[in-house]
Image (tube, rainbow, N blue to C red):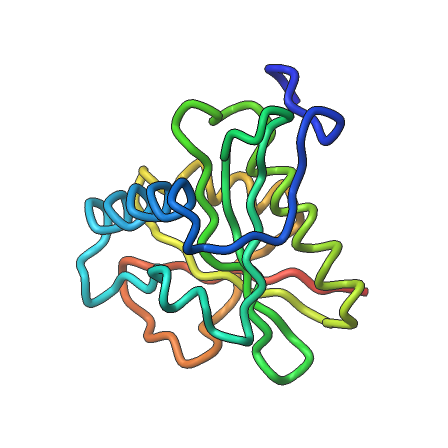
Length: 162
């Protein structure tokens, strides 16, 4: 990890997607996905979608409370979960924020007894860093899950949670 960000100076916590700074970051996330993926193939959640009771929403804040990134864990109801709504602020990219959020969500999923995590992400160059992050965390390509259609704009990954 570079740039000095670590859990000692901040960390990942359960948060409310209705907080103004979170809503602002989520708006940037949705704008990014809209710029990379046709709307009919974009499955990013807005604030109301993140309020689903099956979803636990997380944020990463530095020691001063500044929001650096977000992510969510959705229970799929079959002992599995889905990593959703991962986004790191442009200013914090390359500093380990995304890695910390993914690791935290994997830990929460294990603690909750989930046996597998899935995710759906984009295929364009704009999503390349995200795909590398997920691969470094152990996620591997897989087929569709959870009713997602297969399009040329999405890719699916999974991680077994022993």
